[in-house]
Length: 148
Length: 478
Image (cartoon, rainbow over all chains, first blue to last red; front, top):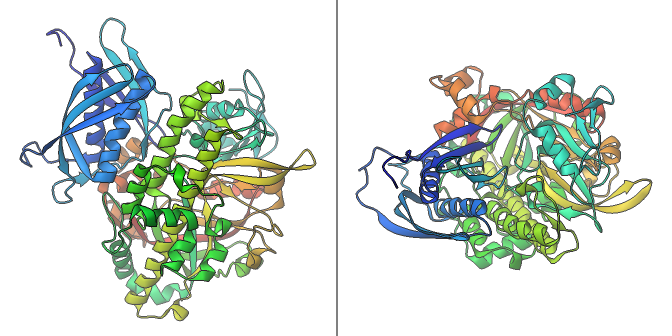
């Protein structure tokens, strides 16, 4: 990431029954990391950093037919880990990103009703109006909708 | 978007571009104004462009912008030329509603409402990672749930055999294919059977506030001042996973079969294809999980009332009035152009509303029509309706499913921030327990349309008939 590159960021947009996410990032890797952070910010309220010491490193993989669909698969994988295994993930780091697959790492801890407060539970990451594109000039932008 | 008004309650989106049939919308003038503000009408038109769609792409008055298909949409497809789309069913396969009536009058329970709501909240798990400690299933056992549906729950001690007579499809969609359900779906289902979920899912203790149709109400065993319980939940993570798994399959299938999509979420496969057959088997399995889920919660509702009120089952009379699917695709026989035809009817946020005399309408209700359960918001009211010949003729035996959202979740949360929502509701006589404060804020009553207006449209259009209005007294949410 060059010094001049703008920082990655995300914002929510309104969708009547559901929730839309918009992410911009200087690199595709940063975009995947930021989208993952956004997902967990939506799911759980975690007390200020340092609440839990450490946590395990967890490797996460996803594959799909195209770049935009890969983003959906990546986030769906994270959502599965949250819903099925009760994991809360943070500190995302993309290790390898190809056209059709991604490998990432994150710090993983178990959902703990004492430390974590549930925010908005989402059912799925949809393909509705899915968009992933290179920005004019520099960087990447993605838009997607979560089913609540 | 061009719209032609056909009469007081009916509107049409004329065919244009890639639309194969027109769009048909049931709404009043004010609702149409609101629908024009987002992309819901475009979504009706997008569905109208799918192969093999019959008559028109239908939207109910509670329609709002969904993902792919609009929420509140109905679309029927020809078995030869048509398609099936997981997005046309939704993630929460067989999200639905079950209504229990009781022999109790309001005055017998109102002084115990806080205890009842607290006990219900304890006995029916809701929210993240919640599950009953006494329910732990192997993957094989989950497969048996998917095979048998609500009957699995009854067999396992959750409820009574006669409950099944008053559930859509008898609590089991035929043709479940457990081999078509992934291990991931089984894994998510294993821990979540018998849980309410979050978002708009709820359990509600209600009173029958008003009877609109004495004869139908009497057939349904409803009377003014009666205590009733409504459960709104679906197939939980198992259903979400099945939908997610098959969206990937269908994205690929749509490419292979050359089906053009206005939105990836509309991805689908021809009804005769292997992909469609596998999805239908997996969908039926997930729907059966949802029926079992609501059946288990029914049992816990009964146990809760028994222990809090110290009364026996005979005295409480917590019988199932009916249980309907709101998100499903089914193969049904309908009359098209004067000829009986098998069709695949997608109902996404819509309710089956079969008429009096239909063989699938339970014997007890055959003279009045199939019960239709329409939840409103947690502060106002819900409705019980019955199906009509009008619905059977016009909307493939379908009607609306709820209030429909008026505000986005963030707008609702902004409006509710800092407000003592629980106190506000308590002042209106409604005790609410919620696992998550965020859910509570997003689900405030004013976030929803007035369900009375929605119901008036379907009643006025003759695609359902009003029977009774229920008012909440106690609510549990995820």
